[in-house]
Image 1 (spheres, one colour):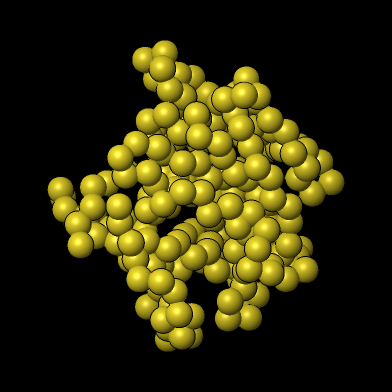
Image 2: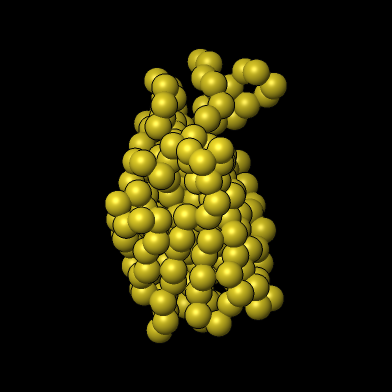
Amino acid sequence: MKISACGMVLVCCCAMALSASSAHAGGAFSLDLARSKGLTEFPYGEGTARLQVSSLDDDRFPDGIVVEIDGFAPHRVGIDDGPWVNYGQWAGTISLSGSREAPSIMFEAYSGGAHCCSLLRVITPVDGALLSIAFEPAEGELRAKLPSDIDGDGIVDIVRESEHVCRRAACTARNAIYNIVDGKRIDVTSEPRFQAYLAQLPEPETR
């Protein structure tokens, strides 16, 4: 199975589903930055999060977003992957490793084009500042779902179905699971406790 590299998802976490526990649950929001003139706001904890399209690439497509959250300095998140702003986006807020942790924002976009991929970024507070964490593109459209704690260890498990795995010009796909702890993305796909869950997922697909 071969596919070309493309697509991007921004995790600030996906739409409500997979029954996230009350310790981690947040909110989920469908966005359309093209129609909202590149600016949107949604609740974040007891405050507000603001997303705005950043500068344009060759005056055609945005090259990212700027995230502003009450109490934090503005943070720019790069999303340099074609006309993603034209296809609708999704954002969610969720605590990734416990109810006392400040929520992270998951931001997801759709790349469009021949290989149409989900692009995910997670924006998470670390040591008083915002940090953005990128994920590999995943085949298909927006997932738009908040992740859940699959194994019950208190850490949210971010599932990426049909994630692209590229080596030079050749790409394949896999189903993957990640944790985010202290601002670091940890690949836990091979952990024995997740094998039963992974076995019931559809085989990775490409278009």
